[in-house]
Length: 219
Image (cartoon, rainbow, N blue to C red; front, top):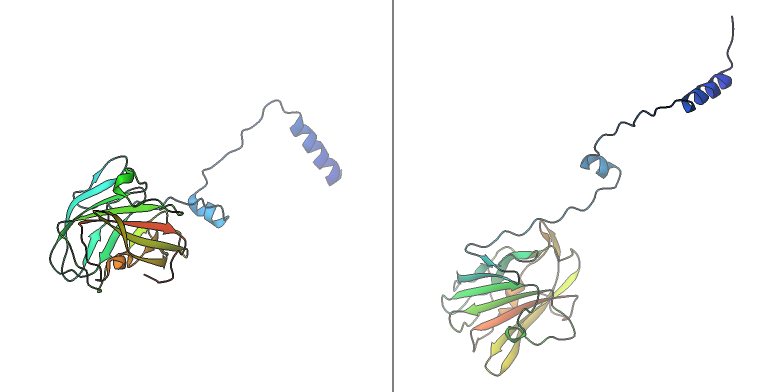
């Protein structure tokens, strides 16, 4: 019986393959997300956009809600969804039932409507226009937080409120919070505590959110 050396057979087989004039296309199949995750190659999915408020209106510069009811027991106000921001602003109890208009933006689109820029640039602005001159208590109601794809979990942020009085802008309150993870990226609870114990002499205010811990008291 003729015996073939396995090494010689393998060389001959390779040579025969090299002499073929046609190439058989390699069969490919789509790579599923589960397969990517198994290989540690899962691309980051964009966070879901926060839901819009009832009767919200959007422009290229901002999103607004013309009127929301406030309660003397404290309120959880819907933050107009804009630029990856949204959720809820919990504010303290008030001396009467007011309404408030709110505008969300990621830029001070009209500098005359915002506090003067400081050394730190805000990453989010929330304008508030009250129906009268509220006096705030110190109790915040339970509610949902301010959320954003631009809030990194476990990173600190500073929340600051300013009142627009006749002679200029006056600081109200400020606090810092460490963002937690949420469906929408990150979240900050109790941001509205910056109004606690405040008495308004005018009807408009602006809340700003800054990166980093700029003050020592927690929200």
